[in-house]
Length: 172
Image (cartoon, rainbow, N blue to C red; front, side, top):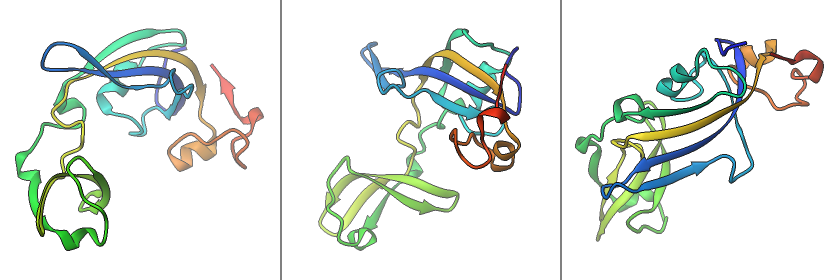
């Protein structure tokens, strides 16, 4: 059976991008962490470009998916690089490259410190992967119908959770 909306999909992936010199840089590898990704298809749990590529695939499928920046974390927006006061960070230790999670207008966002110049801190509120073309190598391990509780929550629930019992899970 192929992947459609309201199914829980379990997969392994390797996420990489290509550096300016043409070499590949691995950003994440679920096999190396021995932790496959489990998501609820059709509920915006993963990047839409990746979810679209997985639609219609079946257990055992192996595919390569390339996402351009606009289909991944967006094109870099230089207007999102700004100067703020050191006081915005409380007593946190600041150094270029250090990242913080803050509450933005659209919810949580990652802020990366670019420069520390006295009381003025230059930060970048672009997503750390904005502007990058991402490559996924994916192997689909399992596809099953979501439980009622998972559909209500909008994401998979861990096995053993009150409303996610083995008998409620039907592997396809």
